[in-house]
Amino acid sequence: MTNPTAETFGFPRTKVAETESWLVLVRPKQPTFGSLVLICKESVEAFSQLSPAAFADLKTATDGVERMLGKVVAYEKINYLMLMMVDKDVHFHVIPRYAGTREHEGLVYADAGWPAVPALGSTVDLDLDAAERLARTLAQAWSAA
Image (cartoon, rainbow, N blue to C red; front, side, top):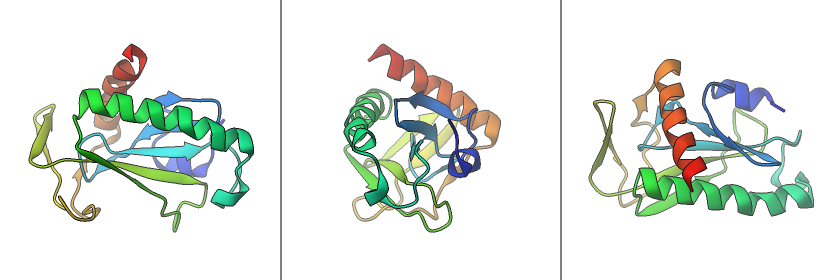
């Protein structure tokens, strides 16, 4: 199942993983390496409207996200931001945080906001092909966990 928010973030090409209630997608604008969007598949626009099943499945989704990003990114902290100002479907921006830089496919990803709030305006902007390649890399790590 998809929704407009998932399509905005390049679904299905940016899909890393999927649980019963959640999609895990690469965020094409990467404030840090491995930034994701965790999108609820239910048709709701408020966190309080999630079904009990979606709340329970959020545990499965976040366990998978953190295990996978720990292996690929080696983050020091992780931020889950629920902004929902433009894209109305319930979703989180998942921003792995770290001191220093990470590299992937010749691109250098710095955490410009470290150790304070994420610098969402300072990003490595991936085109859809690059976002899809990153999604495949992350999907392999998800499956290996």
